[in-house]
Length: 194
Image (tube, rainbow, N blue to C red; front, side, top):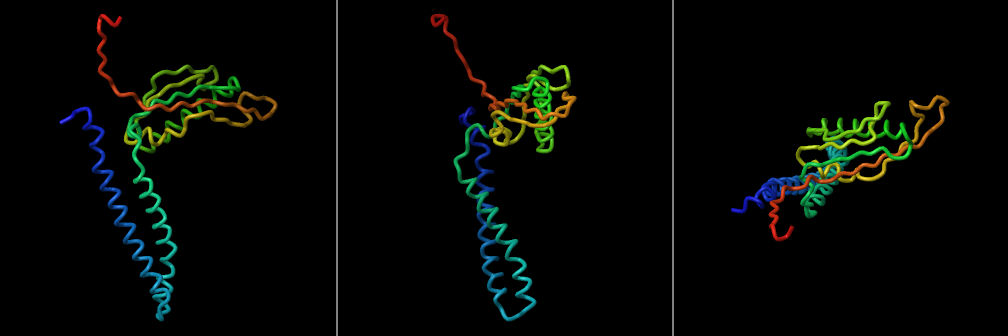
């Protein structure tokens, strides 16, 4: 009945279905591991060898499912399914920092394309050599902020830049800010409050 709350609750059933499916798969894999270990100790040499070969695969599968279940049990961040606004600014390093900022933008754009996300450039300030002094772009798609939220911070690179003629190593930095896209808010300004 609440149109503002409905979009937040809509993904919950599918998240819970996946958690239950992972739990069922986890229990099946544990039972298969127990059965394989019993068969590996059996008297039939061929069967024991095949069962012993399955044990490492099952242990790895159980470990992966356990990690997925633990992650799914954590309370979801209310922002993790929002679109992300990413700002990359060249830091210390002059032209090389601008080139590095351009490399970061291309890296994030390619990752977003592979992950099935939509990239929309909002604002940019290109440098003379092909990089960016600053670029702001929006990524849209499922779980976008969750995938990019830990990219915020200062990124550093040490390399021989294209701008260096003598082959010396330079250190350059770029700052990355990742923000969830804000929800639209109804705002009412009263004349007596102005």
